[in-house]
Amino acid sequence: MDAAWIGALTGSALWQFCAHIVLLTGTAVGGGMIAVMPDVHRFVVETNHWVTSEQFTATFAMAQASPGPNFMYVALIGWHIAGWTGAVAGTIAVALPPALICYAVLRIGSGRGGGVVQRAFRRGLVPLSAGLLLASGWVLANTVDDNWRAGLMTAVFVVLLLKTRVHPLWLIATGATLGLMGWV
Amino acid sequence: MTAWQLYATFSRMSLGGFGGVFPLVYRTLVERMRWIHPTDFAATWAFGQMLPGSVICNVATMVGYRYAGARGAFAAVLGLVMWPLIVLLAIGTAYAFLGDLAPVRHALTGMSAAAVGLSMATAMKMLRNLPRRWQHFFVAACVFIAIGLLRLPFLGVFAVAAPLSVWFLWRTR
Image (cartoon, rainbow over all chains, first blue to last red):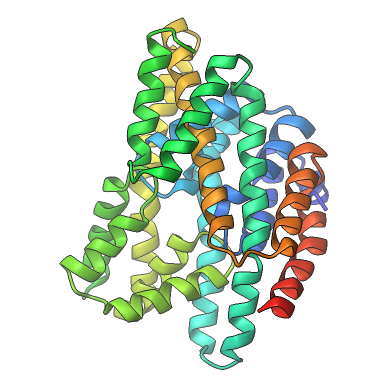
């Protein structure tokens, strides 16, 4: 199920990576590409060793802190694998197939099909997405929170995000500052 | 509305959208430009969530298609990803040169700790909005264990968990 056979046909790491991303976009319903991040990590870091866990985590954090849709971390992983070509290919892999599917659905016309069934389907996947996001946090935490202070910082950020309406970017900037000061 | 205008608007939104583009898309398309009625936007968003892939990408496709056909859809999606990609390439290049320096590594560790918190908080917010039934938490916990702890491939987990998850919600609705 890893799309490895597609890569095996073509033999290149970049093709394998893109094929895997395309497959994942096909299942990213509800939670988006952030939710499938653990599987990108598994494929890229654990199975193929194209990127180290530290690089992956840093990449993810950098993509979160820069402007644009949050699925763009995929482009930066592509960049690690194959430079500029990889970044462009990763972006196409993550953005084009869903856009084409969406376009096809619009062309064929929607609106038919029971609203209740659609709603049950969409809302029904929320627990799945929530579990995936928790797993995302866990996978990243394994790389980052190897000392108690980073762990404490993560915990404080979670509480702040849940209890206040603070913008996530402020927390990322705070994290960078505290890191720079040598606190974590 | 021309394809060019769509490209320019989506470029501006994606470059201004730090930590996700959604709030900015709503403010721009609904409140400032008044291209879309709020109810329409909610429907567009819900539909974008149902289709595979990134929601924001689907919304760009739908909005672009509606105002300028296939060219508009392409222009909107291009605007959404092109400039962030250029910014990320610059950041990636800087990381390649500076990534080994101690202060940069420390700052990135701090940023990563914040990104971890972000993922976890989003997950908890999603769980908070669900009806309080043990089944939903059961599915979320199973997915967490399978993907996070056991590191099973996602596609297999999805094939089992998705029907189960939908079925539970169907029964308890």
